[in-house]
Length: 303
Image 1 (spheres, rainbow, N blue to C red):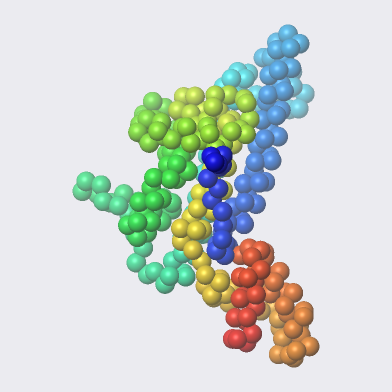
Image 2 (cartoon, rainbow, N blue to C red):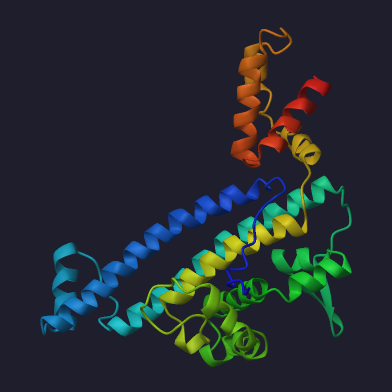
């Protein structure tokens, strides 16, 4: 019997790195804001087309009404600029996550020597946080991560972001590197994204796109693959419950509630303390009850 091929879900079984919930929250808030902005753009475009309105004149009227300077009246250019800005801002969230993930990874493994550069020719090139992680993993883990479609696409959008923020360079020059990367690494993964990321909004070309064809769909895809990449990294570099507890001990707020409860008054304090430890674990590391029980067990064994 044939089984239906499903999305290759990157499920989390080990405790979550503390940086994952922050990534989820940051992306969720940003996604809601950008999606709302895109709805307004799409509606405005449809509105002037359906009602045969002169879009440029309407933008000028609205600019005067709301006392906002309209730098351009070209709707296609506005959409293009917004699509680019979505990628830039999403990268900022991604970079923050990878930095925090690396910090925890180094901490739990007591890593003192961390590669931040790579030799290219005679010079050392500084690595971004994701590629720093890649180059500090074991050979097997590095190999698995390097061929993951989500990793490749995250790296592509990073290069694209770099091309957008360096506006002092001519566009055909600043976008040359991401274009070459797309043709070399992303073309072969397009089927993966079209098969497993189907519920992407229908505005614009199917994502991922070359720099000159970038649209709103690229931002949506970027945001979604970051969540799956984060989950994959969580399992590629697993955190144990014992390590999660060690991280908690370094949290200055971790012992505030136990002290208020006066946890040394055992067993009277146990019900409240159990509830606190359970909720703390859920907020920071996940909902697995076996892991939660182990976390509580470690607390009582040490304190």
